Image (cartoon, rainbow, N blue to C red; front, side, top):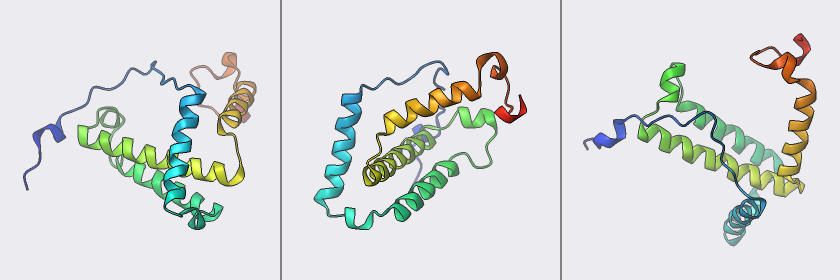
Length: 138
């Protein structure tokens, strides 16, 4: 079957300064939808921490497949088809992350805020700006 020509078109790379902003209520609604989907199918019985961690790793590997053997420039200019795949894998990762957080009753947004605050101490702007060094190398 011939490929759709639009699949090979390059997608304009997003601005590196843009951030997606999601309210906590929107995030909670999406997480609830994810959990409701799973629970309606009685799949929670298969979602122990070990299997969820493995699933996260597998989905991360599937995300990486989209970048295999690409240069930095190529990875920033994916075809529409590759970008579609990246979006789907990111969604899968988010879904399994939601399941794992539910398993341990982890408030992910709280943990992320805590981690960012911790990283701000480890990587002060005056030492880390423009550097790829690990905090132990400052």
